[in-house]
Length: 100
Image 1 (cartoon, rainbow, N blue to C red):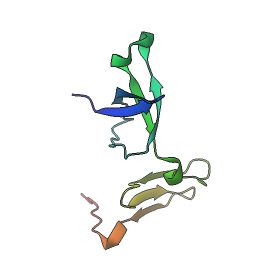
Image 2: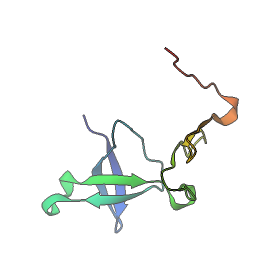
Image 3: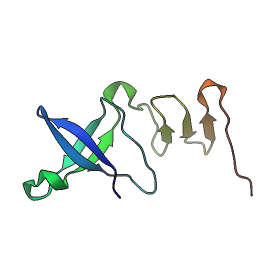
């Protein structure tokens, strides 16, 4: 029932549960980095907080701004400091908005 991914830790593969926040879910791309939480040195119960690879990290956001981005394909949702929401669909794809 939990998402498991394999991470290379000090040259050793470790399986860990991927921690998703607040209803958001992702499947880490190769070269992602993770902060590993290991309870009582039991690697069988490791939890990973996953971060995008350094080259794909989102920088330059102002305080309070938020961006969700598919780093593999490029589509994104950006909430700026002025209260605007910008949706970018990579490759001219379809954007659906439920109005009711």
